[in-house]
Amino acid sequence: MRALLAAAVTAALVPLGACSLFPKHEEVWTPIPTRLGEARPVEGDTAWVLSEPAYELVTLDRERLPDVKTELDLAARTYRRVVGSEPRPVAVALADSVAQLGRLDTTAYRRRGLLVVPVVAPQPRRRSDEPMYSSLRAGLAGARVVPAAARAWVRARGGEGVTLPEWLLEGATVLVAEPLLADVGPVLMERERSHVLPLAELFTARVTPPALAPGERRPVRRGVRADSVAVRRAESALALQFLIERSGAPVVGRLLDAARDAGNAASPAALLAAAGVSPASPDSLETPWRAWLAERREERGARRGM
Image: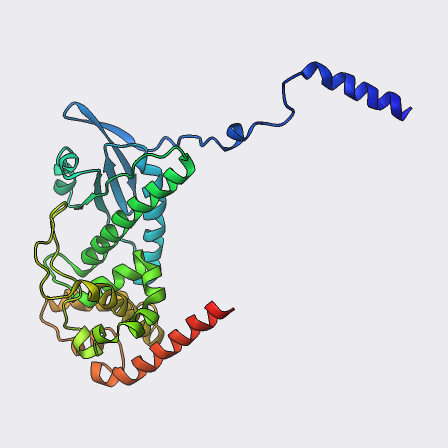
């Protein structure tokens, strides 16, 4: 009986010939294009616009929308957790080159009061390995777009016309958009001790070199050495984490509000006091700050040794 049953199954399968019962690899893994964005004509071309509560993203390349959307959505959620409020919407203009950026008309966004964030992120050379190419493309775009958008959100919370202290601006940007830099910060600071500043100096120091226009190159580096920028930005982010643990998560939002209310005139101690940090003197915070950093280094070392 069993032999007859096996013969019947075999006979039923034979007519299938070359047809497989299982889908081919490419049939399973071929990505389905995600159709995001609204088409808007611009000077004989088409721009694609993706609108979300925290941002509007405009680009000439529709393929870039899904990758950048994922990264920006994550950053917006992180901003809400770090700052304690919804990010003010910004308009992100994403292009492959400065010339392409000039073809994106952002006038309508400016009229609506949106802060326009221009980002030039060239696409990598296309590879035959499509999944690898897609991953590389997404990573490169996210590395340019997300910090730029996060910095704009932080600036907007500080208020129009207010120049935020650089440690506060860059520290909050790192926490929102570059968590890996904050994670390796304690080790980086230990390795580059010559670039680490006491809190009293960090709170008034230049953290990054002056900003450049998209595509502009820095002819001469002045003010801050290039190899110290990552250290200063990591230290700024860790200083905020230290204050969060001492005073609670809303302290970042309170610091930004205090900077906005002071209008470029407040001292570091005044900002800390207005945000509810105690003690408010940077010098008085230095000893517990150094002890906190040592604990973070030990924790990270323990994680790596597991």
